Image (cartoon, rainbow, N blue to C red):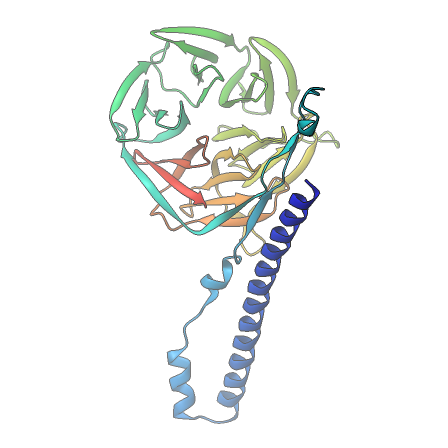
Length: 373
């Protein structure tokens, strides 16, 4: 077993060495380009030379190429699985090790499936029932279930007859939705709709189910002066998250789009469109960080709407204005964009069990995107 671990260590170190070599190679290229440009600028300032002007006209920027971090990867470390002692089989007393795995973010994610839904107005949310079926909701009174071929399998009308703000799946496969017009949270069971929670003085917006079977709901007060995240177990309120350690609001209040997701480390991640930020708090409600885009991106250009998390603990949020997805790690560090799949105003997000990403677009399309290899 120790020999197995040594072999895994060697693989891990080799992968890190390859990544370091790629980074050093990129740094060398960038340094040389900067030197070449400085020399060209000096020559142009000293005297006019036709050949120098030709070099200027022939120059092509490589900024977009260098924005992509070389071969970023995550390592899934092995876990030990013990075995129950069997005195008749002494040679099998020790348990087993799982294999170490390397997962790379694709430099160029690609679209696996492109689904045209019935929505012609604004498609808002998408939630996976399983790896081959997904629920959608938008600006009408129906929630619709599709397969990956785009076939409509089922539709359900909201109890109030008005459109819903968000949907999520329970661990048992039930569909839960928020209804802002009658301030309720509802469960679809077959052909029946059961009202789980009716709020007083608050309007529900985004919601998600958690690993423990609870619900997290982000809501605004009726006068739009307060916003909070509430955890429910069934219809019982267990937790309310609203203020930071300085008694300042964690979220921007007002009639703005707000979605949320629970990460695998139990952090609560909120896409706060009005704040131009992803706000992440711990399970206890303590502020961990605010992500406002990569350092090179002006804050006012970041417009987070949909949000989800994957099995590696990475956070994905849709940037409506820039037509792209930001991928950040669980500590708020920018990793990569998804901006090459022809996305048009991406909204709701979810991932399936294989970490394939589903993106709901404003004009009614759902795209299934692979971004890991």
